Length: 177
Image (cartoon, rainbow, N blue to C red; front, side, top):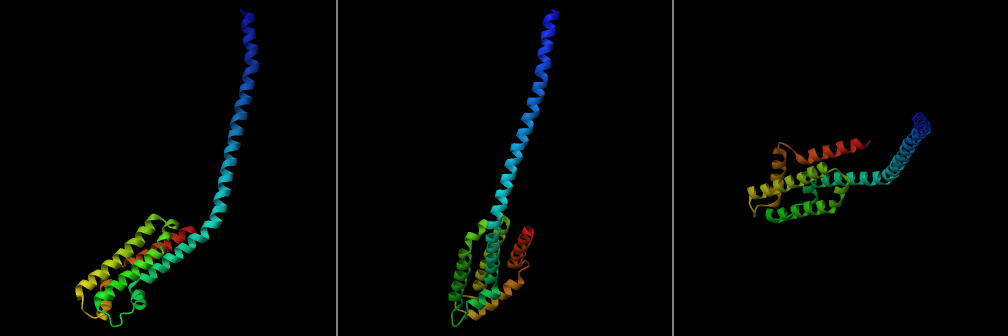
C-alpha cells in the first residue's frame, strides 16, 4: 500500500507541474492570439477610416447643401415665379424639392439614422408648408403671392425644421472631430 501510495505521489509530482505549465502556456498563447486579432481589426478600422472619413465629410457637405437649397429663401430664388399661376408655381416648387432630395438620397448611408430622419422630416415639413400656402391662396392667384405666403408660413412655424436639421448635421460632424 505504501508502494502504491508512493507511486501515486511520484505521478502527481510530475503531472501537476506539467499541468500548471500547460495551462499557463495555453492562457498566454490564447491572450497573445486575441491581442493579435484585435490589433489587426484596429489597423483595418484605421485604414478604412482614412478612406471613409473623406466620403462621410462629402456626404455631410452635400446634405448641408441640400438643406440650404430647399430652405424657402433659397428655393424661392432658384425657382422664380415669373408670370405663373400659384398652381403651376406650386408644382414647380414641389418638383424642385423632390429633385434635390432624390439627388442626395444615397448620402443617407454615411450619416446616422436619426440625422437622416431629421432631414427627411425637414423636407416633409417644407412640403406641407408649400401645400398649406397653396391651399390658402387658391389655384389661380399669382405665383408671387404664393411665394410671399410660403415665407410667412415658414416664419410663423414654431420649429423651423430646416434650421434644426442643419444644427443636428453640425452636431454630428462635431462628433467626428
